[in-house]
Image 1 (cartoon, rainbow, N blue to C red):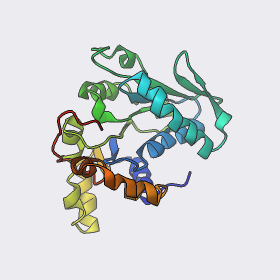
Image 2 (tube, helix red, strand yellow; image 1 turned 120 degrees about the vertical axis):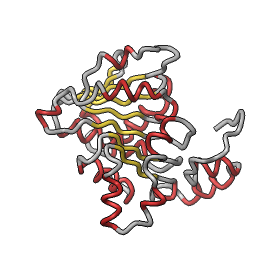
Image 3 (cartoon, rainbow, N blue to C red; image 1 turned 45 degrees about the vertical axis):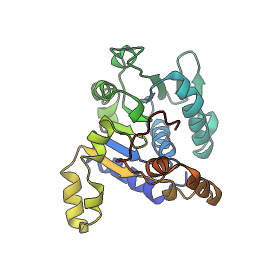
Length: 247
């Protein structure tokens, strides 16, 4: 797959093994799903028998949004027939024995997260993490690193995507990782400052960071109401919450 500069930077952070919890996103159309799911697909191809999971709040959003993204990546990233989706288990089964599980995690339906607590995973992705409860993250900490990690030298990782929100994702990532200060530091100090925040990593990705967005699409985003433009296009985490907003 052809990756953007920001996406390559995120993959480099994963490969550094300096972090366990890595966040990519902060705006619509930044290519966040492509990079995290593409990474999972590469892992499943290259390491036989690994088990990874993509977590979203509901099965309907997995079916409506995540599966089309996976199918797109399978087309971009080699032979689309290298794995097959089982709709009884909602799992992509690879020819080499690897598995990519699709798991819903809604505490209003499953308060103690039984669907997660029995899993043994190599690593996991929380897609649109801001839509889920923080307890999902806590449960995943106990689930990753339990399937072929030592055999292949794969670190325990949880990857995150989301749009800006006023909840635990902001506290865990954006507030902890002061991105504005980082950009003002010399390179050597930047590395030190970043590592002091390990095991967390935050990388903002906006629509303008994705070279595959058309000019027409970027121009259309200017039609959003100002608060939504601040949140979804400029990645402003301190936006004012609007009651009953649709997006």
